[in-house]
Length: 217
Image 1: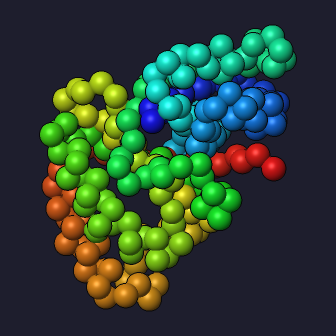
Image 2: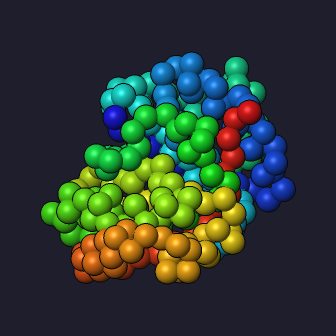
């Protein structure tokens, strides 16, 4: 699988219209063409509400290329041309661990932490192992769920990594910052501490924002 990261800056006052079109028209159209929309997010904390993030999966580069006219909004999809102020697209490769397929309904969350790290490209495999084996088990115990971890398809140094971890709400996100207060088993907390520290040593810099998720009915 290959994934598209599409970052969209909307013009003012059109967010609700765009989201209605994107969720109820574009999303099912992409699915009918064989694509796998992973999530559609808009800014909540740390980024403007008019900034959107799409992650969409495709079986290969040619499938991605064939869907570009659909994503852009063909005439048959009735997308007004004046919604988008600017957009940027990156091709992404997934972690071996997540995503594992279409996002199941019970895996969906209302709020996502869109966290970006920059690491040495040769550390990608180890970074993912430490995430899966060390960080995610304790966090999953508290109800969070990572729907995907991705790297830029182009191998650059540093290499940009995107993690999308879901939470029930902003309060839930804050609560998971303190696993020692939430009955997380000692074994999972120990993994979080030790392997999490090892993962942090691979990071050159990072940033995070919170985003609101929008799902089809």
